[in-house]
Image (tube, rainbow, N blue to C red; front, side, top):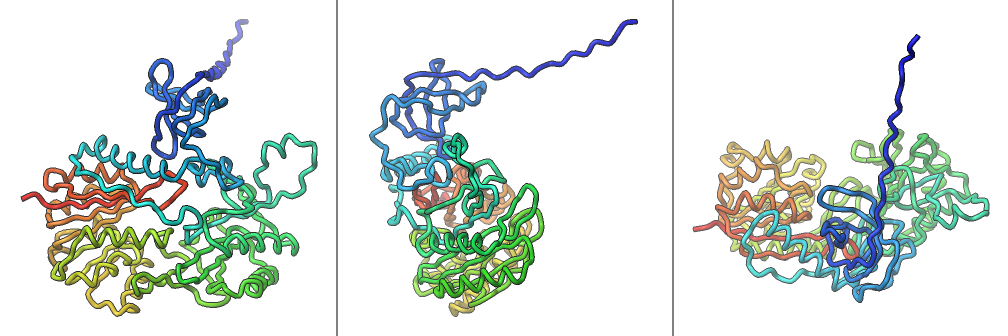
Length: 479
């Protein structure tokens, strides 16, 4: 009797190549750097600085490029500096800490210019030098930390013979690993008392038997900790609980109230669902107010736990001043502020406009925008909620008027093509385009280049020690 034959095709193990003595020549998108393989293909690297000479082991091979990691350094770039953070290279949050700040600014400006020219095929005026941040550390006003009962172990800990009993963590996700948390001893992104509050929360929780979350198996009491600060010294703390244990919850929150009387707003959430987003959750105020205030040029902005606000307050002020200067309002213009968020830019430019109309898709943000405008006694702003590509239509324009100036500050994905087309249909005299992603900005601007000239380009660094960069472009309608 003939038997059927079964063959098991084993997947071939991909061979990792090693390239020696490669000069790292440039910075690329997403914080990576660039070298060249002997065959001329680009190698994208994750642990080098332009100017390093290294041996590289490839991690991915594609038709047009490689990805790799430096495994040996022959010489170090003169652009290097010593990272200030003990968690550098593991945390993944500040990938450019080992590069001097002046060089970070150079590569950010270069990326903006390259994206506008190569993706958008745009004719650019001479670009204004990038505006650096006065604070290179401790500049963020919002941080979110995660609890874990099975923290990320360092290589030294794994290779050690010692038994590790300290498994709890309060810190950041390891890049690309949803269930692994790096315990943070000191973070250099948010000013004090941010580190003190985080460390004391962890210490008190362990001492009093509050369990830390296990995301894989979905158990544990403490889930996340969010801290917000404002430039006028107000502090918001939000603790997210997975399990509803009233006695232990109040034990921790009362301790934080006593230990940190400077906390303006102490909030909590009980969230038993699988993901830890709070935007569909009830926020409960334990003590103080349910919000804090930010202030800018005498304007006060209410910020609650769900509010969007630029995370670098001081540099946001500079960004908004550039936006207002580019708009160059004379007092008789109707201005549309697309993707208005909580209406910060709309209110910031309102005193130089006849009227400002803001549009935003998040209902809570529009409620905040209206409340802020009322608090600031601003009468010449109107806010509307809805999906931009649906709300921003002919009927809306007929009801609210044809704008003289449009300010647009879309999310990273840029503007929907229907929104771009509507701008072209309206054809305002000026468009000021604020972007946190110059690649999608370039794509949108290419669609507008037949009707508009680019007059000014101003990159702004909102996030030192990272590759992220903001950019403001002024468009004027061709005559």
